[in-house]
Length: 450
Image 1: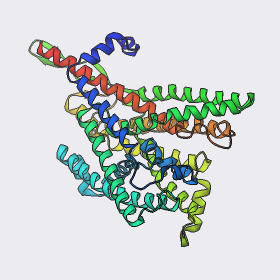
Image 2: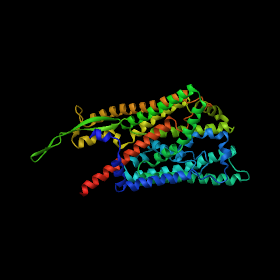
Image 3: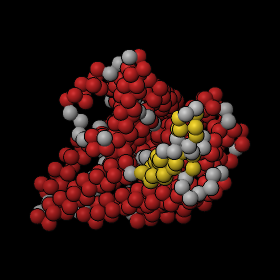
Image 4: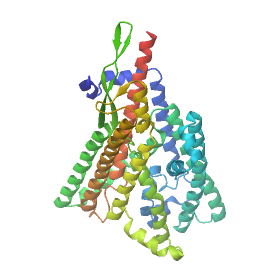
């Protein structure tokens, strides 16, 4: 059975996916929503001079934020902010949930009603952040000559801020529709499709780098590509790896028959948060650092904050060791935080359920000792998962910093670096897992009906 589950999909598997009742409609709906979302990336803001802005020095400073919009921000699109404000709002809400009793009660005690209330708070905060971010971006567009001659700047500011905020809310709406009616996590899929859309330009940049470089440069480029391919394999292993905790169920007699006494296990994923810790870490770094670069480039009056802004602008740049170290620390923090809010990663609840159903871990007493034992296992498991995730960030970033530069002083992989690559693979694996779950559910439905 285990070997059959690991085999590659064949024509029968694809046919089963297409013929599964309900799954086909969900897949088509997901594809259509992603297509509509990508269309908005090509609708420009009113009054912008996209060509002039593209030729300015501003482009290199919006690379971080552009990942969330799939290049829409660089094209001055109505959906330029993309899913970024929603991701930032989700981080803030999840963090404050731990310290605000009302929100914590909604999350843990109120069930579906509580989750809906928290989702509503996240939407409100998304609108506020979108207004703030769009105002800053519009000011940045004006400073770098991205407005057509003769356009009234006041009207341009008002309409652009409202339009970009609406685009962010539209991105949120699409993400929630995909999550509710489609397949997979809507927010992650929007980031995924945004990164995928930039692959052709990245390959074009790699081709140009290969044509301009000599034999030594070709070797560096090949080595970087091999490291990136190896990273894909390690991401797959990390996503699928589990720590099994064996349990036995107590025997009980019903009439003349004896039930229970069987051994099974609880699977704890090595990386329970998937790609979410990386997305959270990236989003925490992306917007403030982009603002810092904007302030430096536009010669804005920074007052007492000038030393801090200049320090961040110098050391917190793509590929810089300090930037990578901070990203790794954030990955550890968000991995532990994300695991702490997952229902299936709560040692006390798991121990109570095991005791309730007469199951136990061999050699461990039920109740509190079981909870403490599981706490130790989960702490070590999460640490291992976060460490491997950090290594997956460090090695490709280090290789790219050493070998990926030198072709005109630019990073040939910028736009689909190590972080983006891990997000792509992680989201793709999660999507495949969701499809498997839907197929399994349909099989059970057909079994029950028969």
